[in-house]
Amino acid sequence: MAAETAETTGTAEHASWAPGEHILWRYRGNASDSIHICRPVTVVQDTPDLLAVWMAPGTDCVKPLLADGTPVHREPLATRYTKPRTTAVTRWHGSGVLKLARPREPWSVWLFWDLDWRFKNWYVNLEEPLARWAGGVDSEDHFLDIAVYPDRSWEWKDEDEFAEAQQAGLMTPGQAARVRAAGREAIARIESWDAPFAAGWEDWRPDPAWSVPPLPDDWDRTPARLGA
Image (cartoon, rainbow, N blue to C red):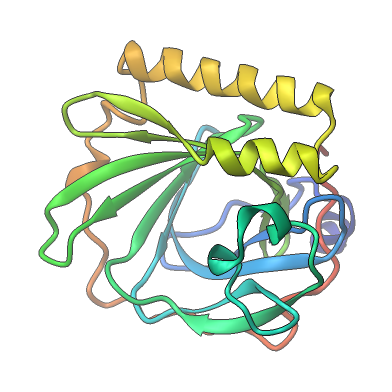
């Protein structure tokens, strides 16, 4: 019964996930209750302070696509958020991604490597705090991001998309102000070089025995309630 409650309310009543377990990392559409991004991932660590997951190369993922088949990133910015959309299943190529999230924090931190495991950068993805449910976690992307480099420099990313999302009515001025404030809070964490940046995650490697998680047929099952 606890797992059933977690799935419908977004609470964390179920037990922690074990390393190697497969879950879903999902995003609902902005101003929508429908899931439009779904990534099967493998749990690396799940404690009261941190959820770490690995998205392996070759993972089948769900991503948004314009209804006419145009990839979202190829649509001009002025119409990117106003044209009808659908979803498509695509395979994640290149290196994998390690994702780190702390409870109630309005961002997650992603780590990227080259194919030869040379560390490239951290990426602060500003988003709703993760809502846990029996099969994974749900969030909503906030468009604005921050790239962090090995020399500890950083830069805002996707500010044009952040502005256009507001123009398209996907984010109110109040929401945008809260997202920018969350970004400044993340920058303070970067500049003081607190966890997870100083935690040595760039030296982490996945267990070679792990399989690539499958994308389940019911990947869009009822989302968790965000903000729970």
